[in-house]
Image: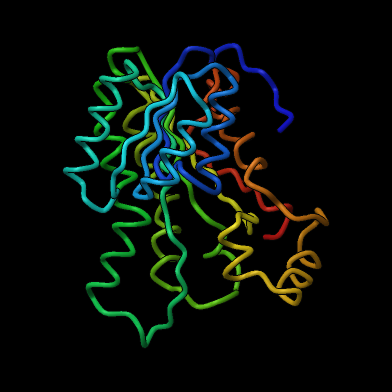
Length: 250
């Protein structure tokens, strides 16, 4: 991945939830290439360990399920102990499983929010001591354009992802006086291996490219580049914003 080098990122510690594969793995690779210390949290132990081994030094992997908040908090504390104060948080973990209204039970609805929204708040809360001691930090929440476009049926996922915008703005307002910036990235249809394997068809890709202004597949590196900028000192005046990375789909 060709990327700008941000001198302000070198040596900083970053934590990425859902960092073992897909967009999260690309973000982990991008920050590592900047000279950052990288903590990867993921429930996929095999993929997380493999990525950590491949990246080598300055990487710490925690096998953690973000739906279990006490376990998530413990994992964050261990990562902070291993790498030193963490001042960049990428709240990336999510799952976009499809479902219809007839499939949804109260338990499923809550589980979708636990998977796609709740942990973003609690991971931010858990890292406030580190960021306060360092004099500031950057939080990047991962949203989705899914609630802005009419395709497929997965109301619980779309509702949770739409709430990321409100969470981002609320935290940015509260944490701004502590020099902690909070922004969100709102990806369009990013062609991770999961998306290609489960959802992409020739028909859906043709429709997507017809609607996108940019006539190519969007890939995880497209999101990682934006994450680097928002985490860097070059974006020091930017907070409470949601950046679409969708090739002009919406």
